[in-house]
Image 1 (cartoon, rainbow, N blue to C red):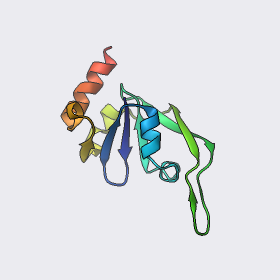
Image 2: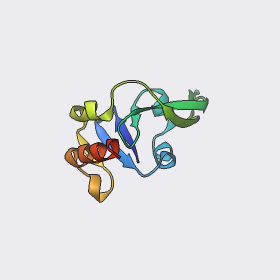
Image 3: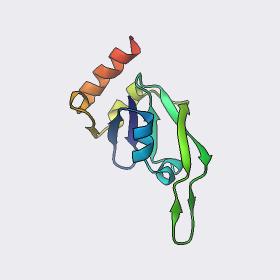
Amino acid sequence: MIYALSADDGALHVFASATEAISYCEGYDVADGLWRFFSADGKPLEAIFSEPARKYTFTISHGVYDLGPGVGLKLQDRLAEIRYVEGPEDQQSIEAVAAALTRSAHS
């Protein structure tokens, strides 16, 4: 499970895998700081670019990135920033996400 918090609208997206999250969150927006990523237990993840995202005159390159360990606040400490949740049936509310984070942290 990977969580992606949008700094743009406060949406928390719940993804089954890092591949899914990376596919959804465009590299240019990630490089611009519009997404924060978290692991299943709420630890921060950092986007690590192997090919940088770039803006050209008429086009944008989203680059290539992967997710690795990051620093900063855990998702549990950012729950107040979430405006709404988009995810599987069992995680479509802030309360459900908080419960899932607690379960994952104790596993």
